[in-house]
Length: 388
Image (cartoon, rainbow, N blue to C red; front, top):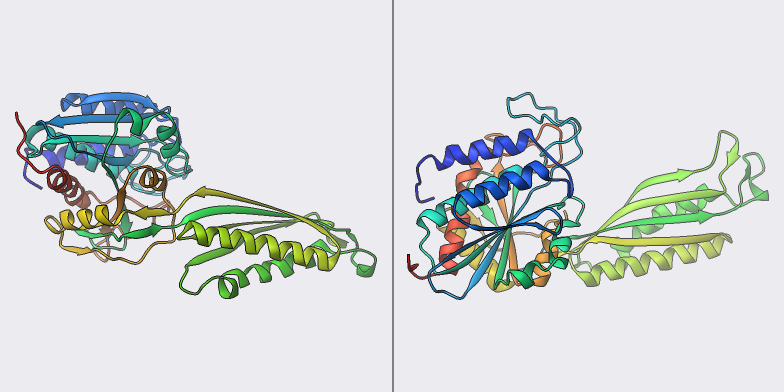
């Protein structure tokens, strides 16, 4: 990053403060207020309460008419932290186990630098969103008029990736993260005595058959070129030691990189469940709820992000493999052309603990590369000397 006095230390301090005070979902009183205060101190026009807890900072320079949005997520996870360092969580059962504390600090660092010394002409919107982890915050902000009140030409988001070296960036055109859908299958059969299985229909046997059959969706019903995952994660019955269950519930999680693949998985699941239920003479219902759509990068925005990263990164992959995790940024990228970028949080040098683990911590060494990327992107996309 172009150097500004003490910016690295400031970002580290902000990040540690956010980490000590994690908050969940839309209940972000300390976090949102701290973000708003900092943005106001940098001289930005600040708007709060968008989609309940969202914060938007507006930075205009020059007479340029183009605008971009830089998005950071603010919420933590309901996890009890296992770390022992001085900036560990002080809120029991809550923890920044996904790096949103670092994402906020990087965006704030970029906002401070761009306000003081940014060489661009146009408008940068710094969007701090609530409730990314449960997939509700982006949609809430959009429904509350985010892009109507603050129209932008492009929107960009970033996420740290443990195991990837600091200073490394990756993105791609097209799908980059997957849709997530939760399903529940309720089987109603006729239970009975374990010694007399012929007098009823055993729901656990039907459920076991379904568990196996559902794996054929990806193996035999999807185009092999279309990635998908179907995972049964719960199998609950009302059976006992010598009682065959009359009811069984299967729950699980599906991932897909395109809406068409997600639709195909749901259709195949309903077909399989109906067929097996009919074969055994039981009833079965299927609930299939898509929480996150896939994140699909606009080709031009993905190229712009890769180009900006090349100026500040040790390594840039502009055509990385897509990831099967899900991201709430998908709603923003569907509303406005945009790109989602992956950034290294540390590999062999440390900080490779998985996201959402109780011993995870965002790597402070990634703050400067991340904020430098935001500065480079804003100056690249809003090229032109500001009239100051």
